[in-house]
Image (tube, rainbow, N blue to C red; front, side):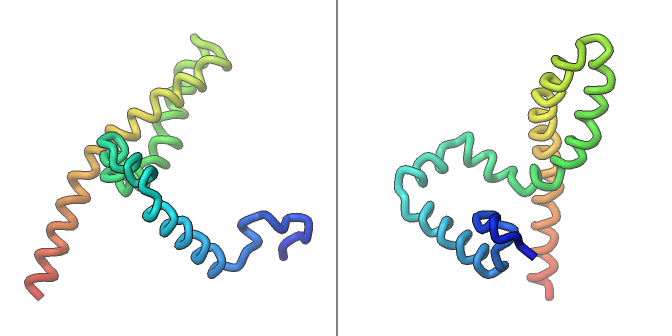
Amino acid sequence: MCDAGLYLSFPCMPHRQKVFGAALVFVGVVQATRIKALLGRPLLRTLGDLSFSIYLVHWPVIFGVVPMLLQRMTPTLGAATAPAIAVVVGVPVTLLVAKGFSYVDRAAIAASRGIRRAL
């Protein structure tokens, strides 16, 4: 049950209201020429191409690589510096792992399309 004082909190909204709001945001972005131009830039297009792979690999990096780095760096760099460096290293590691996984993803999509055509 949602607290009446939290009326602006998204988790309190019914599911269809969230879906409708997301659809309106999508339509707004599609209609905004400046936003479309920004999203069409090469760096953002590359990130868009990798987005599914990033989605799949970011948790293992966040809960595997980053804590390992944090544990190894904290004794020498200290509790203030080590977390910042671990996060800064975690982002490119996520992107590299996602790039590698994107080849697996593309091969799976191609295989799926081949099977669908064969059926």
